[in-house]
Image (cartoon, rainbow over all chains, first blue to last red; front, side, top):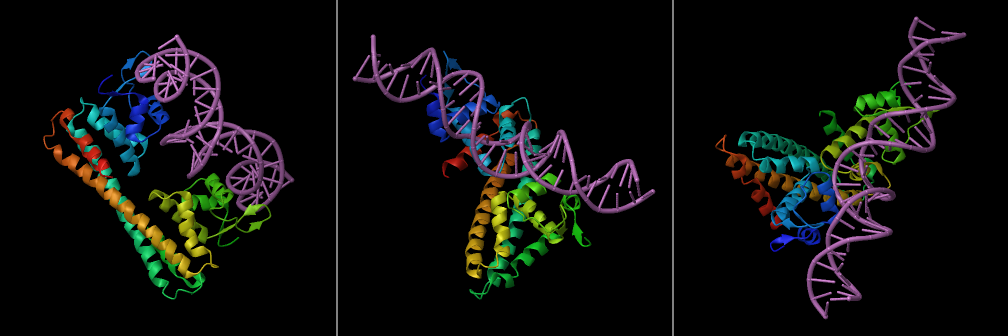
Length: 138
Length: 138
DNA sequence: ATATACCCCGTACCTTAGTACGGGGTCAAA
DNA sequence: TTTGACCCCGTACTAAGGTACGGGGTATAT
């Protein structure tokens, strides 16, 4: 019990709901820890695991992608090579997303700039066309 | 019906399911087009709208955010002033997304770099710590 | 004029990612 | 030793974003 968390303490430490942890367990995203009687006792590394999952989600990865990333570290029969490949795939994905977001941002900035006359009715605002045009050559 | 699409043709042109289009209509994300009898006939601009929605989703916006973006142009009773504010909010959002993705990318690159010895067992790979550190000062 | 491909509507179902609930068991402090 | 806070499990529900289905109507090419 020392150096370990009940499910409630773990949830608190990770700023998630208790049910979320039970949910992750049911889904195989984290594995069931040691039990003392009917109670789960989590060693501290679970804090890091759950933080990792949450962080990944914040950055646009799904739960199963987050699990995949975690597994890169956890499955020690795997070799760094595997990690490298998966990591590089994710990086490529991220690069594309950044590129697309930047394009979108430019369109929006164009929109903002064209609204110089603050009381011009929106119908005359060329932003949408801007936007649509950018979509066209995609 | 020249120059317009039946729902099936539109779906095909946008590479989405017919049901998706009906779903968007029910949700008020696109508006019902002219009907000839019971059939919907969509003018071409719907292609751009749906592409736009799909694109926005790919970039991490929800359907209702995508709708909001689309509305920047469509509601002509609004004034440029409103558009400007909303546009700026969206730009801020996009900037944050880009920032987060870049952080994620850096972590992943760090991970990739630490796997120099291609046959090193994975247990020695510091990926988890990488991520955790980033979450802490969040 | 008839096949058949397409459309209509409503309803039900699916996946992801949880959250809530209820009836019961347990631990620990007073 | 009892009371309150916490845990157990299973089941049901939510919200977003669709997808599928079934019974019927329609448009069009032959």
